[in-house]
Amino acid sequence: MYVRPHTPTVVLASVATFRNARVELRHLRYLVTASEAGTIGAAARRLRVAQQAVSRQLLDLEREIGTPLLLRSKGGVRLTEAGELLVQAAREAITRIDHAVAELRLQVDGQLPSVG
Image (cartoon, rainbow, N blue to C red; front, top):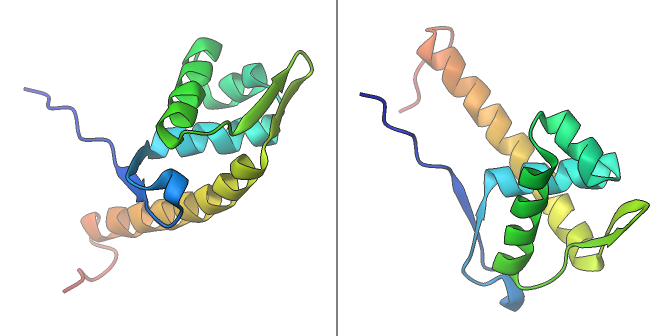
C-alpha cells in the first residue's frame, strides 16, 4: 500500500504578518520560479505543471501569509516588497533543503557515513 509522504512545511514566525503561517516547500519553489520566469505561464512550463496550478498555489501562499507577493499584469508578474523578502529567504531555504536531501541520498546509498 502506498502512503503519500507528508509535505515539508516551513513555519515563518519572525515577522508579525507571517506569524504561524504554514508554507509548503512547493509554494516557495513556485514563487521563486514565477519571479525568475516573469510570467505564471513561463513558470508553469519550467515547473512542468498546469498554469492554473501555479496560480492557485501562489494565491494560496498570499492568502496564508496575508499580503500580496506578486503584482500581476497582462505583461507578467513582479514581486512586491514582501515578495522580494520572501523570495530571498525561499532561495536560501530551498538550497539548504536540496543539499540536505542530497546528503541523505548519499547516506542511503552508503556513500557517506551516517550522522549520529
